[in-house]
Amino acid sequence: MLSTTQIAPPIDRPARRFGPRRIVSIVVSVALIVAIFWFVLPQVADFSKVRSEIGAMTWMELGIIAVVAGWNLVTYWLVTVAATPGLTYGQAMVMTESSTAVANTIPGGSAVAVGLTYSMLGSWGFSKSRSTVSLVVSGIWNNFVKLGMPVLALALLAFQGQASGSRIVAGLVGIGALVAAVTLFALILRSEAFAERAGEGAGRAMTGVRRLLHKPPAAGWGRATLKFRNRVIGIVRRRWIRLTVMSLVGHLSLFLVLMVTLRDIGVSNAEVNWVEALAVFAFVRLLTAIPLTPGGLGIIELGLIGGLTAAGGDHAQVVAAVLVYRTLTFVVPIGFGVVTYLFWKRNRSWLSSAPPLDPAFTVQAG
Image (cartoon, rainbow, N blue to C red):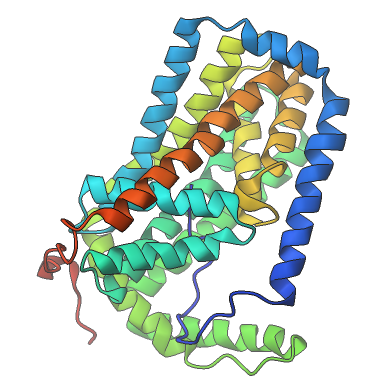
């Protein structure tokens, strides 16, 4: 689903909707998808066997998978409501599914999806400031969990005696990244002075990168970070536990869809146990931070199939399970999102319906 992977101070400027970079992005995305689905995957498994594995599933197994996949969709709405005081669950459903459909179908669609999110929240009466806080907070918690899950998976593998040297190194790197991210975030929220210094430091670092791209230096990052801190701290103080729990539930629910699909297809615990599957799932989820294709299409499938077959899963069964899993978590939400988008365009009862922001969620600089 849609997530905010990088947070930078907002800059009010018109975005170029189409240009050379966008064309290159589209060409690269299409080329990768074609290469993976038409040339790589057919080498992994016989698709006649894959169709047989899918066709062998019973109606009860299909029903169980559908229920679990449906619950997975609901968990995203829970996170959105937790991050957006005043938003209803119905609005969260419409916004989340519509933006996800855009992100999953258009190369570079994440940026378009963010714009759609602002449009929806604005139509319901949420200010740009409240909308930004929602995107930032939900994105930060999403990334914290993404960083934490590989660490958890590697720790569980170590308890099972499957921790190789490379896995230990990867785990230590993951722990370091997670601790650094959480510590930096905590210090920014705790101290205005630190928040401003951190923003200025990030601006100086980004200036060097921008010079390589022949762009003007980054300016105003200190003030922007301080403004970000004052916007976010109110909701974090009151809802950090709820945000953490809902974010964990969301990621684990997505993993549950994969596990139920694997077992219903026939991949046994003796072939791939749940800890091995969690490790593959967690590391492949990190790939979604690299927007090579819409929704990670092709990249995620290849990563899951490669990891699960390397763990011991039958090739045909693993490919069948991954394709069913991605159909339920990638393809189906696109159709659902089209419906919710059309509902948003026609519905007038929610216009300017957002309640005033509870003062408990605000904080004054000082």
